[in-house]
Length: 277
Ligand code: NAP
Image (tube, rainbow, N blue to C red; front, side, top):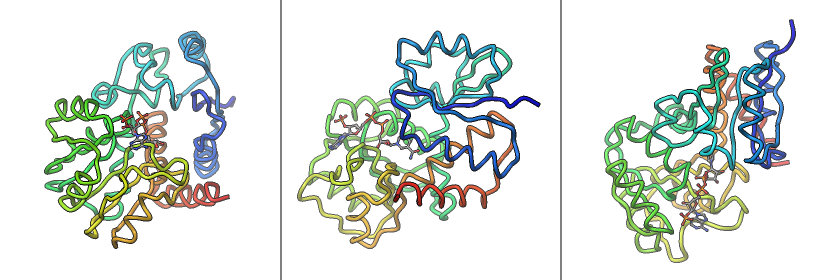
């Protein structure tokens, strides 16, 4: 039988870890799926989708900068994609294109796996971009107690906080120290740390409590934010678990099959090696 196709689509996608994740999943499950990394500029996206609609595609993972623009090109949207305002997974359901957001499910999987429960918890969320929006949605869905959003640009945090009925403040050293002292879980959903040097925590921030720290960044997997958290005695996670979990959720949407936990752990371990190389 001819293979079906799936891809990660973005601009650029050269450094994406998705092909490695799905290669490993296909090998383990024996599924005849060819997974590619495809570079499209924004102007090419609509045409490419129209052509793909009638091809042997099962799905696309969508990465920057197309996650928001592609929403208008879908025939329908899942409730998570609609509420998150972004699509990171396209399902080719016959000739019908369905937009999903698997970051919402992906975010909670590593917490659940580690036995960290969300109902009633206090969360300090750093950042107010696309990833922070998906995190807000996941927190809301799982009955979190209270959320403080801290962002460098206050008005972006204000938009998010009013939408989800959370609280917000500017990301200053004083506010960050106070929020960390108050929170059970501190999430970094900013892009500060991608360079391995910068931290979202302004100079002078104190981390006074051994709470749970979760950095959505996975490359590098050991960020200045996590190093500060480790020094404070925190339990901590990087973004690799979420990355693998959102891929597993895409797989479930495309094939109907849930992947075994042992396989996901193995994929994550392989990615750790790749990220460190
Ligand atoms: P985005 O929409 O561009 O938002 C970036 C956020 O980072 C904004 O809140 C921005 O603040 C803040 N920021 C940037 N530089 C900063 C700095 N030096 N200090 C403080 N705040 C800073 O990006 P995104 O799509 O939300 O992605 C955010 C991060 O999540 C990225 O690192 C991405 O790799 C990661 N992510 C991981 C996964 C996963 O599966 N693990 C999934 C999705 C995203 P302003 O509003 O002030 O500009």
